[in-house]
Length: 169
Image 1: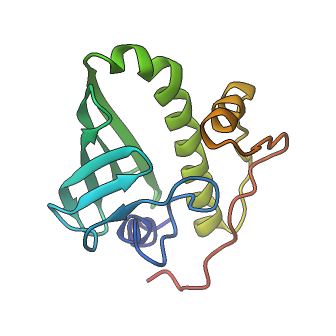
Image 2: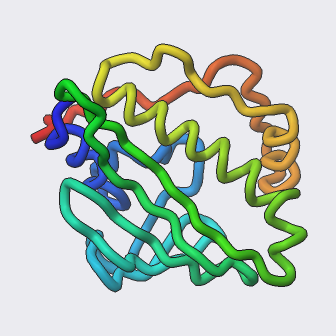
């Protein structure tokens, strides 16, 4: 897969035509302006600033909430040989009170499920299908039920939103 096609997914983050974030299953990523350095926003209770952005290549978000999160997460492209490109997610986080307790119990399982859905969305956008769709664990389903008051039982594979109708440049 060409770097241009994969990088185009990063560039759509938080936009009206977002083709990377799993907006059908999770709170949408939104910012106070288009994706750019200094944009302020996040998704649900998770807040951050865009610390760096290289269009078509990478974006880094610096956490500002929840309390006790000190670090960043980012999406980056990496050449994987023979014309292949990897979309890499990296999170570097130092936990302070109260996150040292809430992160392993709440935030980590939710983050991991959201990220798997995100990568499924990227695979669907780029390949037209998802070979092995992610599944939410029973614990993630329980957390979502408790937090939202709604039932997110998803016992089967992830129902990834369909391929966008916008052409990838």
